[in-house]
Length: 256
Image 1 (cartoon, rainbow, N blue to C red):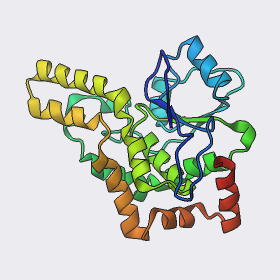
Image 2 (image 1 turned 90 degrees about the horizontal axis):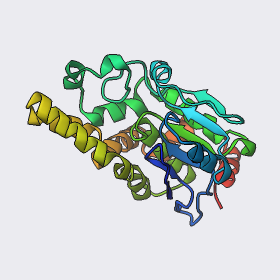
Image 3 (image 1 turned 30 degrees about the horizontal axis):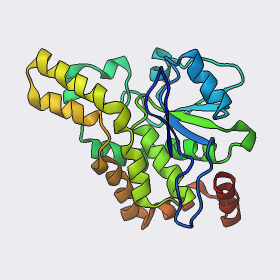
């Protein structure tokens, strides 16, 4: 995997180069996880288009989030909005109405939120996003998929993509944890601001934690699928409904 260094955004990376259990490698310039295309510099978008062949953007945010901070529209790029969560899912979605201190105090454990993305009402939306990416024609790659921070919804979708392609669980978790390289400074600043303004170390620490990628978060989602379906692969096989031949053809598209 390769971190993509942009001036106007952090937490962009190409999943190309990730090894699968059968010894193959995810092709570069196909699957890029990132954040909204809101503050990108001209050179950033030129890099994504020229070096990485950006053709499709899949926005995993809620409709309200996308309206409040819309992606910049660039020529020859297809934009698809496929929300993973319903509006106002406290802790992950970022509409203005759920950014208040009162709602932040009510946040459920992130492990529970992650589990809800793969087993709750959000499951259908997750599968829709996953299937959309897997079945895109090759001319529509690379694809950038993103939420707001590129950590939670993006992390869940990336873990499902890599699971389908055959990556090892530890490889998937390590990719997820890489988000901290782009998030740790912001999380620390949030912690200091809450500490200074609210004099509440416990709340400040809680919010800081929720703005970082933690192994326990992604493991909660993966474990829940393994408990219900015996394995993540079984879950994907049942929900994606590809024949074995179709699944192999799709993997061949992404692997070398």
